[in-house]
Length: 237
Image (cartoon, rainbow, N blue to C red; front, side, top):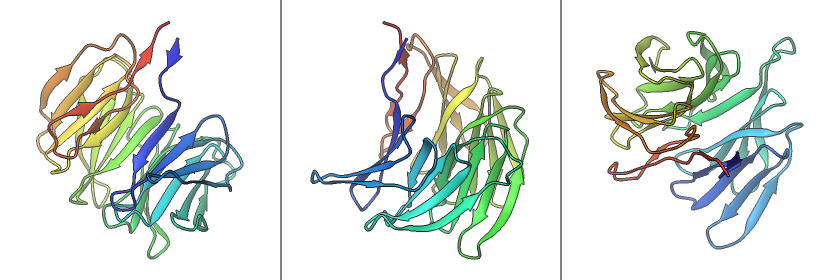
C-alpha cells in the first residue's frame, strides 16, 4: 500500500504560499508561488498539521512534540507557542485558524478539541465528546461553527461557545478530514470507509455520498466556488 501524499497542503488566501507539514521531519516548508522556498525550524518532533490565517500573514503548526506554534509567514519567526501538559501523552493531530485569525482550534488523539483565544492568550473551551482520536478540525467561513472529525466515525459541529450543535453519523469508518464550503452551507467529510459525504451544515442532513475510491480517503477540500470536491486516497500497488 502506498500513500499518494505524505504532507498536507494549505494555501494562504492572499500571500500565495504553500505550507507543508511532514511526517518525516521536524521542519515546516513554505514555498512561494514564484519559486522561492523557506524552512521553519522549531518543533522537536514530526509536524502533523499546518494552517494559514485567512490574511496569509501567519502560519500555525501542530506537532507530535505536543506543541502548537504560530509563525510570521513572511519572516519565519516564531511568535506564539503552546505546549500541552507534561502528563498529556496524546499527539496533536490538527490545527485551524478562525476566519478572523484571533482563535486557534486544535485536536489530539485522545478525542479532545481545544479552542484558544490568541488575542487574550486564554483557553476558551475544551470538549471531549469524541470517543476516539480526532483527525481534523475546521472553522466555518462565517466564524459561527467549528467542525471536528473523529476516528469514532462522527463529525461534530460546535458553536462559538463550545456547545454541541450537530453530531453527524453515517460513515462506516473513522473520519479522516472535514471541510466547509466557502458559503458555509455545506460540509464535506472523508472517511476510512472509502467514501466522501456531503452534508447540510445547518440541518445535519446527508445530501450525497461519493464512492469510487478503493481504499481510505485521507482528505477532502472544496473548490473556491463550492462546485467541486477533491479527495486524495490511499492506493494499492
